[in-house]
Amino acid sequence: MRRRLRFAATIGLTKRARDGSIGSTQTAHAHAIWRKTLFLMGLVGLLILAASIIITLGQVPMTITEVYRTLANRLAPDFFSIDPLIDHVVWQIRLPLIGGAMLAGFGLGACGCVMQAVLKNPMASPFTLGISSGAHFGVSLAAVCGVTILDGPYFLVGNAFVCALFCSGLIIALSTLKGATSETLILAGIAVNYLFQAANQLFSYIATDDQRTVMSYWGMGSLNDLNWHSMLFLGIVSAICLPLLFSKAWDLNLMTVGDESAKSMGVEATRIRVLIMAVSSLLVAAVVSFIGVIGFIGLVAPHIGRIILGNDHRYLIPAAGGIGGALLLIANAVSMNLLQSVVIPTGIIMSIIGVPLFMVLILKGKRREFWS
Image 1 (cartoon, helix red, strand yellow):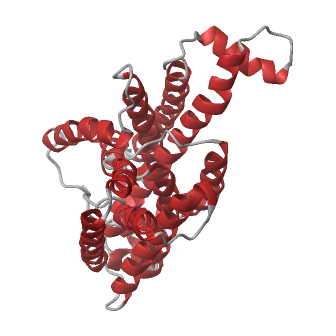
Image 2 (cartoon, rainbow, N blue to C red):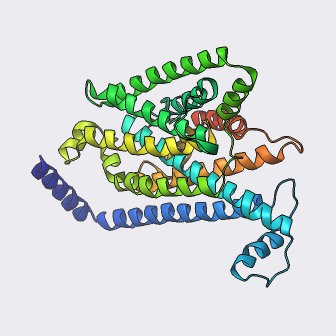
Image 3 (cartoon, one colour):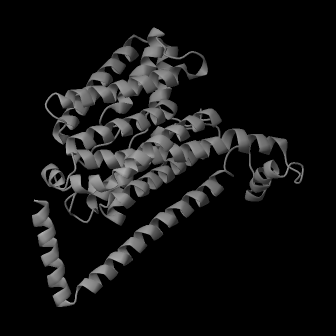
């Protein structure tokens, strides 16, 4: 089979060379790579610009000059005269919140992208596959029954993380009973999602008002509890998982064509599918354990990147991650500043932004097939 492919490729190159078109094809390919690289660079600039503006917003007013003087004061102590209140707000509240928002949004966007690729389904995301519901179940278990994995301030985080991993492991285990096909994984995810949603509803029914408040607050999604410790944990997990996902970008390109075509090119689709689902589930579990249930990022961000860049996952994965980081950063800024005296849960704002955005993507998605 590989000899046939090389033979066909040689004939194709010969014909294009005879027609004088091989040079123009290479030029167009180089221009496409340059456009994609330029978009990724612009996306990085957008994140930096958004962070620079958002860090000045909040109930404690400050200018960009005051922010950068506060930041520079850590490099050159006592060189600048700064306000101790602004120093505390910038370093202990807003910087970890902004950094954590970008890490969490990047993780959700990138994981949504690879899940849609391995499952060949545009509706696949950490939210629709039930991983978020599993994490919510862990919080409900801690709030109502007092069953916790960790003690101290991170007892909810520990339960959410372990139960999210258990949910994703259950999905993968169910899929391997008949082979890890994309259809089986999706059906297993839907079944597990409904199972944990029913369990959460049962806990909500028997919970007291205080317990129900804890469950409801976590289920709405919020970034207010992010700090340097949570940001460090998210950074470590991201540094482990994201390179593994990026390393499989070319395999994902082949798998989108079909498992048989991927196998003919030497890619074990079943093994790659299970590996990517396991790695992305670990990253999603880490994210949702700290910020709660925030939908639409893993669903919308890959679609935006796909419309702009196409289906090459070497560029699509970082693009979906960057778009996810920007969306979560903007949604959190709106949630904190929309009302003067109330901080709205970020998950609510993200749904308000995500629903019309997703409808626009559906209606103006160039009316083409998902993998065309």
